[in-house]
Image (cartoon, rainbow, N blue to C red; front, side):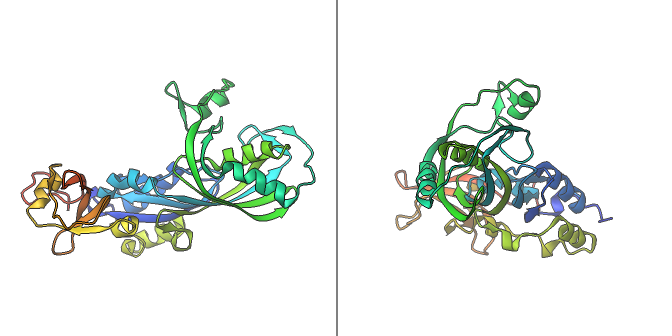
Length: 312
């Protein structure tokens, strides 16, 4: 059994390869036990059917869960045309079967074009979306047939990787909140035969890629042998897409207390940035407000000296 650690002892990110059959909360439970801390959060839910990249934030970096979740997501998706299911994936009951027409590549490409760019998408009935305070999947399991509102999502890329009727494989790159199951369901309708998702692998979330992901077994082995640092990633991995700024040590207090401070006229950053001190220590995140010529704190990761409740 790994040695029990205090919550404040472990900080960083894990790039976990979630196995099929696990919920995202199952993964969090495994990480908590392995690292001996309850301060663990996942960035981007994956259905039990899905596998692949699940970023996990540990310790003080749980404050960055929302930021990591905003990153673009990439998927490898397999689908079966001609069969609709209650959940829009292979875990549901078959609700309809229809013949698959003789589709040309032009037909498929034309249908895919309907789902590229910014689109309006209705989430699956069996999803974690809340309806009147209740999860849609809970209502659906009770036969309540929840009516879910469409919402705007962005599909950056949607390409055919394989077409072997009635099966197809797609590469999907999309924004937060996009349901690949819904894309597959709606694509099936656009092609006139229905469809459901049979396999889903998340390839990346922001800067977290599948090739660097570790299995739960690798994580547990590292924790049990005192090698957690071998799999724990620094904040820079999650934030590498952001520009950086170095500030005077006096600004640590401003950042910690959410107070804006003057920006130099030569600052060229026009968005959120990583804020460091002159020793290269990551202090948090701040946004450059060019109109007001100030830095506006967004998240403090390091308390100022003398803080009564510091995190080490």
